[in-house]
Image 1 (cartoon, rainbow, N blue to C red):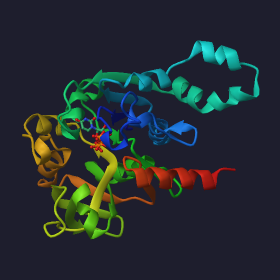
Image 2: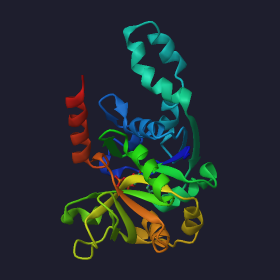
Image 3: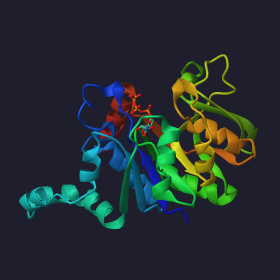
Image 4: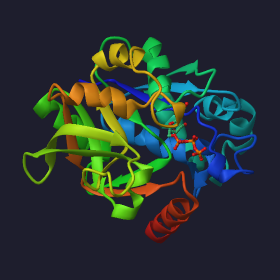
Length: 272
Ligand code: UTP
């Protein structure tokens, strides 16, 4: 059983300035729930009840969100508003939350390496909360756990993107095992459209085996001077130890304004 899920949330969220000047982008709401809560709910639905955050400066609101707010709860107790906190209360009751800080923004790979202290020697999920995912039946992370149980190696969630957008993603290519799975042979971070080996893009959902930490420790800074998770995954892929999984569902890139608006409209239209 995979019990732990890591949330790297140390990034600055510069695309949402000035909204993210003094608050984390992961706390921006889609309707009434912050992005990060959707991610934690997805992890929980996949059986991961140990939620580990790699945070940074200005991210205190995330810790406060996953804690009790006595004054407020006392004030709305017995009113019609009380039930609005039910979903977050049940998460607080069911999950264990741990936190560590990334002092310098040295990239996603570096953030995950910082998370080693919270994860230890076991396979774990990774959710980038600004990719908001809605599964067709199961959540995306629950689908990925099934993929892990089948292949017992690192799993990356992928989707096809327009060729002109490949330079925003890690791109994979390899042996297509069936409609759902690709055994990854090659991964490259943000290639130009003419250098991209495919249009299969990695989105913000991973299951990683713990050997990734040692690989990350020895991974030099790559694209944009950051330690790239893609480079470390390429080392695993060279040994046939990365499977790309075409998930069933929909992803909204809520790190971009367009994706954020699309997600808001999607959830608003689905509202009972
Ligand atoms: P992004 O590059 O999408 O996020 O990183 P960002 O830097 O916060 O956003 P912009 O581009 O400035 O608007 C992907 C994920 O990796 C985390 C971010 O928090 C985000 O969830 N991250 C990135 C870290 O935790 N640490 C880093 O050093 C870099």
